[in-house]
Image (tube, rainbow, N blue to C red; front, side):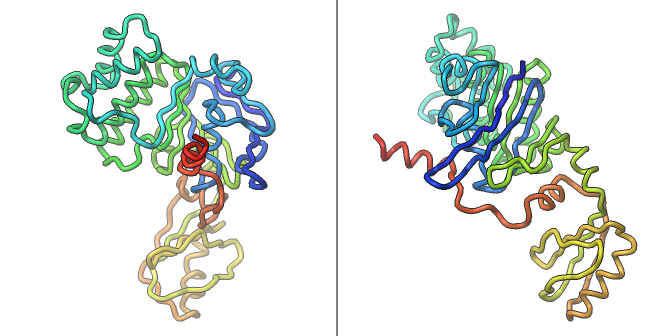
Length: 318
């Protein structure tokens, strides 16, 4: 039995298809769902955590159907949303203790001390949250999520806005949880993190999975060299056999080429004919960013449902 299993999972908002017949299996791994803003990532997570009902298809967490056995599903998962979920007027210990009581833990004090220790917050546990750094607050949210020992942990952008040191610390804890048998489902915009820390990656665009494999396999499948040209000028299209523009940004153009060494002089000449000066050229192996741009493109999907819209919708219903 897989920790997460979806078959044809679909969600519409009026005529808009936010998630389009998604079929996916995740088990005993760190799985990253990547995609542009509005591509269906958060809608997928909201369905898997029973916060949204699918229109078609099915999904199960730990063998329980998310639509018909929601209570059993919620007993076995934790969800840490992107927005801060701690009370800054309480101490760290009080925040975690509150979650332990809400989950009906029989020994909330001992459990609180244990998860705070796991997240390396014992020395600051009795300080008010408003004195915590962003990284400490995120670790406290993880501590809250662990009080009932979930089998599956959903993390929506777990390191967004954090500095490099805090990001590495958070991922160290996530990997420790994975090593201890927990299934981790992550959404993130940090491709380097997905590449380095995740066992598998799924890329979603317009509600559909367009790539799914380990980071190393996805990069190998690209089977192209990546060329970066720093330029002065405004280039148009470049028509060279076996060469494709992945993106343009701030005086820099990224290409993929079937044969990078042969393509280098051809790219320089093509740009020169457009009156564009090439100040430097470099060639490297593909990264997960390149895979993402290759399958999704350089523009973000538009018009899809997102978490903020979901919250607005709930407020209007009250």
